[in-house]
Structures are given as C-alpha cells and as structure tokens.
Image 1 (cartoon, rainbow, N blue to C red):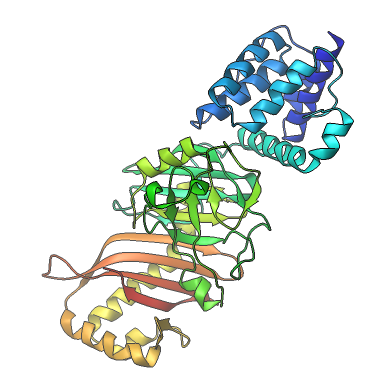
Image 2 (image 1 turned 180 degrees about the horizontal axis):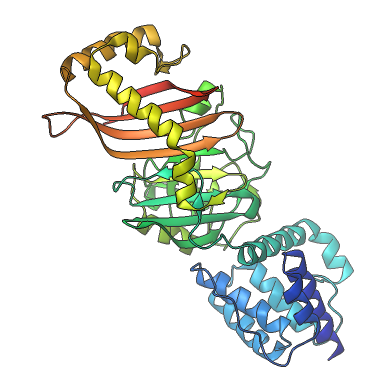
Length: 411
C-alpha cells in the first residue's frame, strides 16, 4: 500500500507541473473515487486511454489503472510511454516509485536519455490536456478563410500539439488535436540541415503515397511549401518539410526528435490525411499560438482589409502609377523585379478595361514576428466575367502602410 501511495504522489507531482495545482491537491488526498474528468479533446485513442490511466492513479484506483494499462500496452505494444507507465504501476506493488520511469540504478544509467525523452513526452501530453484553448477562440493567424479552405491546421511547438480545424459557415471549429514531435534543435529553421522546424504560414502541397516512402515515414507524408516567399525573401534555405508518421516499431517520438518535420503517430496522421485537402489547406506553425475571439481577429485586420480594397480599386482604375503605390520597392516574383513586373500589371489592367474587380474565395492568413505579413489568396474576376486567375500575394506592413512584396498567379 505504501508503494502505491508513493506512485500516487508521483502522479500528483506530474499533474502539478502540468499546471493544475488544485487537481494535484486532490490527488495527494487520495480520493476514494475518481473525480469527474474534464471533457477530453477529440484526439488519438491511445493518448486518451493513457490520460484516463493517469486520472485513475490520481484517484487511488490503482487496480483499475493497472488493468487499463495492461490492455493499452497489449493494443499498442510500441507505445513506449504507455509501457513505462505500466512498468511503474507494476513496480509500485513491490517497491517505492520515486520518479516516472523509476528503474533500478544500473538500468537507469544505461537508458538515461530515453527515460528523459519519455518524461518530456508525458509532460507535453499532460500540459496540452490541462492548458486547453479558450472556448470558441481561434489562432490569430486565421484572419479569413474562404469556403475553398475546408480545413486548417495550426501547430503550437511549445506544447508539442497540432490542432485540426473545420471551416464551417459559422466559423472555424476545432475537430481534434494531437501530440507531435518537431526538430531536434527546436524551431525557427533558417538553413538546410539545421534540424529545426520552420515557423510561418504554409500550405499542404501534396499527399505522398506511403508505398513510395520508406518505413521511417510511417503511414504517409504531407509536404508543405517551405520555404515560402517570406522565407525566401529572408534567405532561408532547406526543403522537404513534411507532416509524416512514425516507423513501425515506434508509436510516437520525443517532443524534440525530427530533422525538421512535424511528426505524428500513424493513427493521428491517417485521420489528417483522410480529412484535409491538398493545395488549399493552410498550415500555421507557431512557437506559441495566440488564441483570440474571431471578432477580435477581424477587427485587428481592418486596416489591412482597407488597403486590399484600395489596391483592388487602383487595379480597376487603369492608373498604373496609382497601382504601383501598393507595391514594395523590393518586390520580387520568381526573379522578376518590380520593373519587370510592371508590364504584366499594365497588361492585366488593360484586360479589366475599367470594370470593377471582385476577389472571389478570399483567404487571408497573418504571420507576425519581426515583421507583420499577410498571405492573401483569391480569384481575381473582372466585372462581366465568370472566372479569372487565382492569385497569391504577400503583403508586409511598413509603418502604417501595407505593401506587396510578392505576387503571382498560382492557377
């Protein structure tokens, strides 16, 4: 009994460090029955079952926790964290358990790195469950999504978490969130081979058939368009940043474990692959997502929306000089300078012939770090026409003015 109490105290410490002191106090008191569990996010079944085991241990229901842990490791034998928790529960019946993964000294010395990685994974999973996004809030980067953006993804690297959204008529709805791993050297990728995960606004560009990949990538891979135009403007290098799965013998990886990709468990990746659309699904990767009310996002973006409307009117006016005021002197479009691009704009203005311009399926994504950037995608349709080119622009705020530093037709 004393050993079990030590394990319960250990779990209380784990929960305390994840940010729930009130709940930790309940655990220390060893309640007779499990407290009502907060509504769990829709996530991978294996993780939900692991968290349920933690809750049972915290409520002194070690027999039930042991039964569930045994079934969990039977169903997911390569889930190393679950194996570690199962081992601790068994060990607590014979000896004191002082820390998560409390192996005898000789074994602990041989597996120190692996144990620390599993402890970091446990802490990350618990933190994501105890520090939930505010109800109805959305990441500030999602200014406006068009109906073509049926889904969206946001990654919070500080929480080792990926959030999957559905874009409904009433707004973004959080469908699920998943534990993820990122670069071994952290985030803010700048160069090829730096083992960092990039930060920014990206899009899923393809869905790679797992048959064309090695076992290392697991159930498949969804490449993103790193480096994007802002990355290239800043001189960042590298390629091959994917969302992908894990090898057959590894259910999940430590929080910092990849060469720069975002890695999920295979069941979680398959859910995403079955859900999202190639080409139109934005992927925001942030060090720490800022969750805000949707109306706040729209209010903050009003100055930019005014600039975009003014650009549209200048484009329709036929006045090339008025239009050029919305472009940055360092504009570049796949090697073309602003001088090279000006004849293209003249030609496009000639086609409009003074008609109004409608921006169909407008999507606006914001990225703010050292600069404030908007990534804008729309169909440019002149009055009297039914279709037009699909354009993507990158705008940067210079003082109180918004300027375009990249523009191109993407379809």
